[in-house]
Image (cartoon, rainbow, N blue to C red; front, side):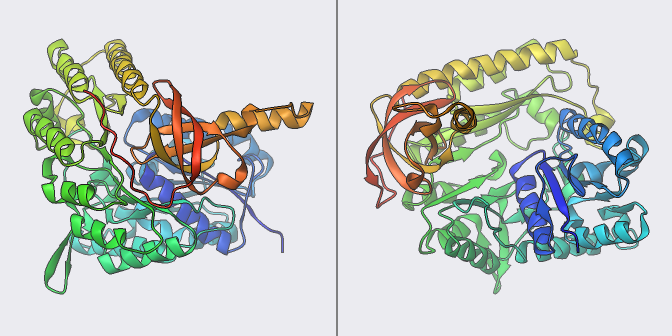
Length: 492
């Protein structure tokens, strides 16, 4: 029997990265082997995002590039999975009739059966939440989707050759916030928290297979709560339970919602030594009037108070933020408030996006998309430039400092240099191909020279250079035996 090849491309958030890992694990177990390119694969799957129009346009472009390959090899199976598949399955079929498989994020456990059905019938297969359970009431539908995904998570296995150092664990699915701009509640369903005992067991299995850093995932991860033996397990307690698993070196979590972030989580971050000093805290806007139109459920004064409390509990904490520019009705004055917030908070980094109206959201139904695209683009560029200066200045303060890094592997520049050197011969002395990349507890990217024997270890390095995006370092000592270091406090 011929071995089938699979190309799976992921577009979007960390949740999509984890979903792709789980789907890949399913299919590798059935004998599929990864392909080097989409054009060469027997099965091509795109795991998609609907948060922004640009992400969907990217998928449509990828699908368009496969039309000729599909005509030449009709037996090739082309699939769209994830949030875009859930949001608009009919639109995908209309625009890209050569797509054979469409599967929403709540039905990913059914992909092997769907592929088999396509092979046997040569008929397209579509399975999304509303279609799979249209006769069920909302509560039954939610439970059915949850059970399907729970089976996918529980069957998780690390595949040979995958990154075993760092792993994501999904602690929560869906979202109940219904921000007016966001499509996630419609594509991923209502918020549900997974049982803590199951999560601890999943973490333990990953650690036993070599994982040293775990990131807990949720759409609003800090609102995690689960009833266990007639008592409520909070997110801070879940963090404590996973933190105490022997062999774990680092513990992170994303993404938090500022509207319900308790001090109990900050206390855990302060008191537990394996908790990383990093917090992703999306603001979306610095203007209260914009936040109200977004239905973000907090005001900017509450957001700033949370930032100050975070720095009081964890003085060396590094903050990341999300911003949307050009939301409905955003005036120059309202945009200026976002600039002011970025300057006040002094983020490590921000993710900044132009607002794109998403079909089906409250904003699409009730609010005009009235900020000109050119103005959105200009504000986006300006805000990123403000942040770039802040990051460059803050990173400069690391010069001469010693920090702990988890060595992840060779840097992108090193991998490119290795390919080049293989064709022209190695040079004497230090080469760019020797450059390793690691990540600090505060999520800073650090590059430094070293050999492959360092990969997977915690090391102390001394910072000797910096840019807005990267720290440059030299090796200091041997492997770190404890993840505790002298706290580093940036000046703000």
